[in-house]
Each structure stands twice: as structure tokens, then as C-alpha cells.
Length: 198
Picture 1 (cartoon, rainbow, N blue to C red):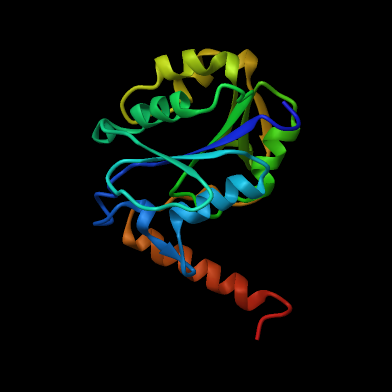
Picture 2 (picture 1 turned 90 degrees about the vertical axis):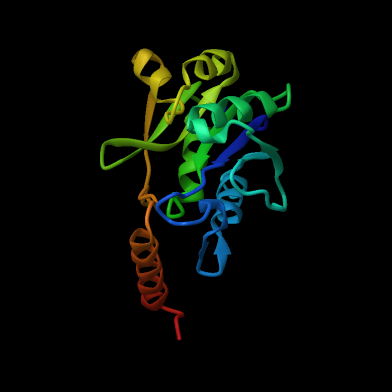
């Protein structure tokens, strides 16, 4: 799956019930999570980037946006909407979640460079996001995506297809205001630790 033809798909439709506002609109270090997610996929080598929105309708630069009218049903419907919106020349897609802002572009690039048709990022041996899926599997992934799960049922049904790709970075997600505060503190600490800080 090396080279062109790999799209990015950012799932950003949720309302962020425990946060009080949609996660796509949250800001971290002055950047909305939706913009950060688009940048993650772009810098990782994906083109185009498709963003699935739902609870919030926002302008997103450098990305194609589609709305999931059934966003309340969970991530599965957003994944189906996103896969259906990909251009026909797409050979594979890297799927990322809007609420994991510490995932690095290097993880996306590693999935693409793996050459696999199905690949999942691992951190300390644990499978997390992002995930790469080849076009030949889009229909089955969409068919198995239900409720608040995305590609996980497909990955579980076909362990023989999955290439695990060890990645640096942190897949921690933001579900609460406390999570957001911890993420902000960690980013500030990293900035202060940089040699050129100050």
C-alpha cells in the first residue's frame, strides 16, 4: 500500500457528552482537535482527508467534510458514512479518531509504509488507533461497524490479515474535562523541556 492513493478518514461526529461540547471543537495548544486530526493525517501522507461530522457543523480547511445524520447511533455509522465518501481511486484509508491528539504523523506514515492491506498501530504491544484498511475490505468493515465500535469487529474476525505496526506517541483519548486538563499539562511540560524553549 505504499505511495499515493491512501486517504485519511477522521471520525469527529460525537457530541462529547461528558465534556459538554463536541470534541471536534475542543482546543489544545490553540488548535481545534478537528484541525489537529486533519494535520495528523496530512503530515502522515494521506490525501485526501475526509472528516465525518455530526453534532457540530464546522468549517475545516484542507479536508472534505461529510455529515453523519445518524451520529447519535455511535462511531459505527460514522465509519460507514466516511468509507462511502472516499473517492473511487482510493486504494486504502487510514482511520483516526478526533479525540487522540497525541498520536503522531509518524504512526500514520508507518502504517502506510508497512505495505500491509490491513494494519493497526500498537503502543507498548497494545492495539489502538490509527488503523489502515485496504479498499478490498471496505464493504466488510462497513457491514460489521455497528453501535459505538468502528473497525474493531473486522479486525477481530480476521486476525490473519492484521499487521501490527509498533508506533511511538501516545494514543490517550479525551473523554472528560479532566482528560483535557491533563493533556494540556503534558503538552506544556513538553514545550518547556524543548532545548529551544524560552
